[in-house]
Length: 294
Ligand SMILES: Nc1nc2c(ncn2[C@@H]2O[C@H](COP(=O)(O)OP(=O)(O)OP(=O)(O)O)[C@@H](O)[C@H]2O)c(=O)[nH]1
Ligand SMILES: [Zn+2]
Image (cartoon, protein in one colour):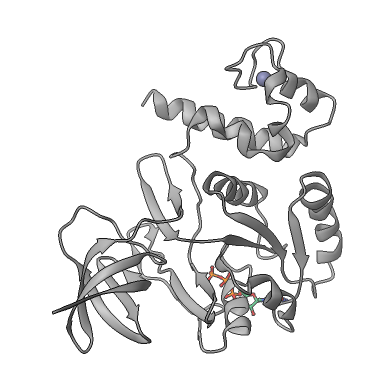
């Protein structure tokens, strides 16, 4: 048996597609200690022409999680950037955007916000407002496009990058994937594209090679994006508008909720920090507090 290093490009439960020298091996993991995920570099024993078993993990550069009250689930690894796709339709949820940004900040992956469906007349004002807060105030890169017609703006952006595409259902992730990577054949629109087990939608992240140095990971069905695995005392640090003011509260361990002498609260009261961002911040802190007592 030959042992080589491959790349996980797809996972279905405990079954993984591992790529090695342009060939795909259907693989399962030996032992149960390590949880593997799309983007992982792994050592595999090649069994035959299309089967292998995964024996070990090459250390990851980073790891993106989703988590809810009860457990964390890993989504993808070894990323350099997160493309967060938003659109006014079917329904925009600002909390989802904020949690994607928090996820990127906490994983040290660069976030880029893509406002899709700019062909819709109501998108112009929507984009203006988002740009005002997220680009002008917070300094994130914001790109506007209409994936139905053209994604050429993204080509340069994803070159030489390991990119994860995330966004609420229906914002146009698969449409973007198909534009950037015509071989992807990602399903779009109303077709049922998920296997559901009970109430939970299973996500099947898939890695596509754009070229030798650029990969795109599409993660359909990612609906909630909890952040229960984060450390409560680190949260404010992940908010760029709070970061440089964190030393100025009266108490060094201030969580900026209702402590006296809190500089962050003062900034919120003076509209120097957006109300929506602070509301999101408080919600995360409250969620993490209840988790501690659970
Ligand atoms: N008007 C308009 N519609 C778009 C655009 N991009 C995608 N759509 C439509 O939006 C719908 C959803 O697109 P998908 O690409 O399936 O969305 P998705 O984000 O992959 O959705 P999930 O897989 O459910 O997470 C489809 O009907 C697309 O044709 C766009 O730029 N403008
Ligand atoms: Zn404070």
